[in-house]
Image (cartoon, rainbow, N blue to C red; front, side, top):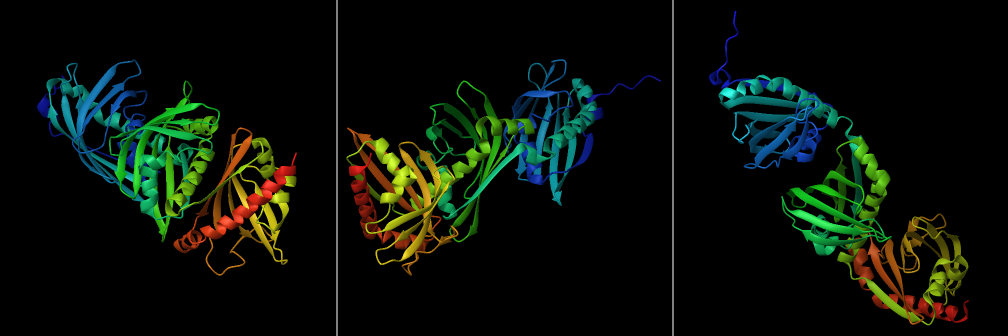
Length: 474
């Protein structure tokens, strides 16, 4: 018998229900379904690519995707977002376009995601709402094509840890302040990037759809231009953006970054960055090429140091020394020299350990004129010859633990951020010490702020000892 010729009416109202379970959390599947860079990796049957993927998941936004077949043929598709309920429901319309950009048919899709025990069930209910005489071949292959697409999606979300970099740090500051430090460009430029990097922000349009353009400059002078587009902003909770950037005239990288802000206890905030790459290979590339993991951890360290300065007035003291910078630098960085002068006037230092490098520990005792002994330690963050030293110092014990100030009952900060800079002019060197409470609470900052006058005496006496040492040093 001859095959009955189908008509548009035969497909109108036709329904498809496709159910698939993924071994991945719902949030990960949701991002793969709503972020253009991820969707382009799985949309379409096997062997297809998506060189054009305009997919901004907000109600009312238009959809434009071009699927390219293995033979190079393009299949353009249009549509619209009708409903977006993160991370559980997505309603869209899609349909193939003819050569003039006219819709050949339209299918309404209702996508729902449910999670159980770390696995996600995807249910797609699709119904043909419009059709034309040329649509039959496309509608007939819809179910098979979508099934293959979801198989590709399963491959994409499998083993998400292999495609992610996650960095996190608890910062001793209220969430509102950490949010401000992250979202205001006048703050961001002071801490964004690994140690030794500087950041210049050309534009930071902090809104959904806005762009953020900045250039990071490395210690060797290499520029790293970056451009990101903000996709989601939930005030005080979450920021998501699509990122692209890399070495100037060199390799680049793209990923989706989600930063979350979580209050863990009073005046402490966990700041977490989750970077999702298109593949495990892309993730491994940025780790290898750009040191992304260590760089991310250093960036969060710098953020915590900067936020400390937003909460307390720093103690700053400077002194000019009649000596070249190289000699002054040696006095601070060579064990035999440092031990001869460092510490308030009348105190005697003994170095138990002196490991001057980023991450290195200096462990020492200071003996007062009346014979009292106190322990201290410093953990170095930055060593930039001959211009800058950064360390975290604290009172300590013989085992290099952290202890309270031994000679006061007031809550002196457990840890202090110390930044020392060295500037040379006409053979003389100006040393500037910037001192701040680090990871401190309100009581510690109050005691610190009330102690600036006594700190002038302590650091002033230390500088006097350095002056005397430099007068005879060679």
